[in-house]
Image 1 (tube, rainbow, N blue to C red):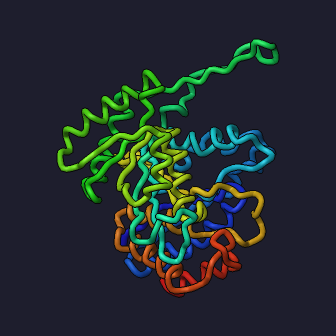
Image 2 (tube, rainbow, N blue to C red):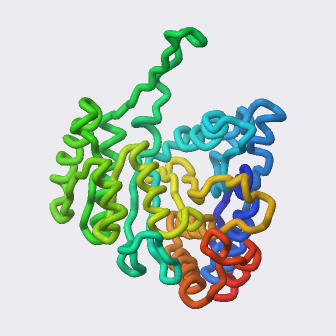
Image 3 (cartoon, rainbow, N blue to C red):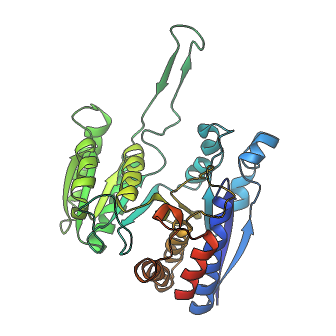
Length: 352
């Protein structure tokens, strides 16, 4: 029987409320599919720890995670700690230290969820945003000058490398091969004069190695509009760090709720552990009330199982998610219902 070592990082806000349901689901699937999961929980890696000790995690945090097979993260962020402190103190060091250069965000309209977008119908909208995750617009290059003076300035450099862009594009094209064979590249080369033309050149260069994949490029502003106007037209969308971040949140809203959306931070070579997390964030406005939607964490757990080599178990989870939404009226508040986190989880477990 295969055993997988899983790091659990509840983090902040509702992170600690959505990870237990995900763990319940994982344990059921382990018994069904003949694998086990051993958990190590890092409960104090959070903004509370930062306020107490001045760091989101210990100095040897990455070393503590290094021998794990995967990481399941709840959420990061608290109003008392600036976002750039919390993210750069925990989430981003893990992504970069473990070369998790693919951020994978599937988008699906489930039967039983009414999208706010009229043309987004169940069974028709099912695509994936492949986001570059470790460089691009979110580089560390730059700085602040003349702080506090009238001529104060801030400089932020975008860094696009041939290696970084090419490896992401290869992943996206291979994914498109396994799906519907269509890829859309997000760009803004009509306005961003250096990095985006470079991105476009590399897309065309890598596309030549995948002749069975049809591809197109769209400027980010037009693409955002088409996500709303024609969401069913997309299969695989590949984008830089900033563009992918914005597009995937927009797409999650089109699908009905950001509370449902999962994400995977992947090291495709498996030299380091990959990390899986819901997209919804720490939601401090509802933390502690027991009303958080656990679906984002549960779907992220399914992505983790697929990465660990258990695609049938992962499908069991997504089938159960689809069933609870299509066959019952049990909904958390973000989906228009009144169910608590526990009530919603119990119904999903029943169907699972």
